[in-house]
Length: 392
Image 1 (cartoon, rainbow, N blue to C red):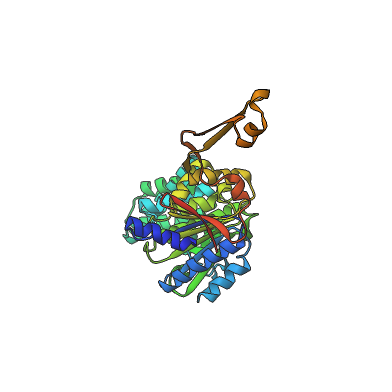
Image 2: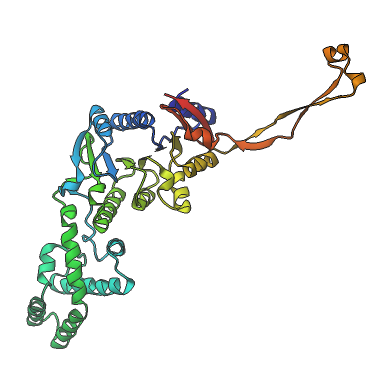
């Protein structure tokens, strides 16, 4: 029985529609490629655009071949030609400010710095409303240029005085307020330029082409962790803005190194979004609490051979225990000469045999030693509290 038949049998027995969001963990390439091929083919059959996130410098050649064979065209999302999300569109809204604060967290801003920047953005929004009358404020490169120097702000405030929109006292107050928070604006301008390639709305949209696979090999930025995390955060915002059922997300984890942001990305996505996670060893991804939440996100889990004993122990615990009733056997020999005559020995009368059964005792369903030695093409599938060994 293969893993798909097992899942179908469980779903049929429980009279439920199979939920096949897969988590695949292990070093067996045969198992990983077979499940990957099945997942991508079904995504293509349902007409879902594919977003592939990898923590390696490039997607493994076998995976690229499978993606192309299934009918997808490939597009590199790290080239700066794909629009992920524009967090500066609605700065006046609470969610817009919250998104910017999350980006600032990645850059190491403390609450004092974030508060200063919030004051700066509120000042810009207020001055724009005085000038244009619009309550919605979108921050653009041109708007940043209008407030980039004290001289430019003085000219803008003087025009507002000349037009009768503010008086001289208000002009001095706004100018003093700008002097207090303008340094935060200069730092914010640097972040704006950093994210500009991924926030231009004239770029390729996420999920625009159902036959396209957008690939994000974030491992190319391993030496620039803040930039990598900023892109992952923008991708998270962009995916959350999409309809839950529109896009399929495929996360590929090499299984070593610092990859906690991958777990945060998956946990932040909508619960109904189709997400699949392929890892060399998911049990080294993050802490136990976060890992438990991540595992709960995937009803169908496939484990192949693991190299680390701690990971094998985690799989052993995940698959649970079974009650085993063991039979006991005991023999007592009578060594007295009288009881060891020829006929007594031949007939077995010189010994006493006792058979018995112990009380049922829990034992691991799959021992860690077995998991460490799984043969190529063999794995363990776990679905809705049931598990089984399978071979491809």
